[in-house]
Length: 120
Image (cartoon, rainbow, N blue to C red; front, side, top):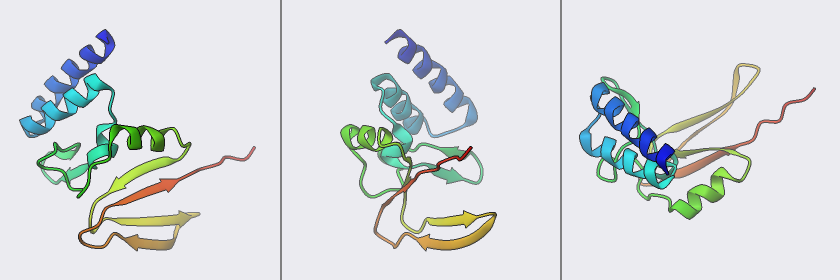
């Protein structure tokens, strides 16, 4: 618990220093204390001025937040998981070439799961 509190305090100071919205920084720090995967839960937000950050419940891009149980099940699945917002685009590349592209429709969220297997 002490490690989570220390990490949350560090993230709080860093988030405010970077200029992220205070409500988003506080929500992220609270999730950090509880051990919740905030980025997966609410989706990341890309801002041209401040960069990429995890938004609060008010500023989130996704329509439906995932519960902590859903988030943990996805994280423990062995897949790389990303919570996509409406109108996000996902590309699949093979050897640097785009082989498929999917755009999330307006009004919907999507979960992108990918699994990478390395061969010896």
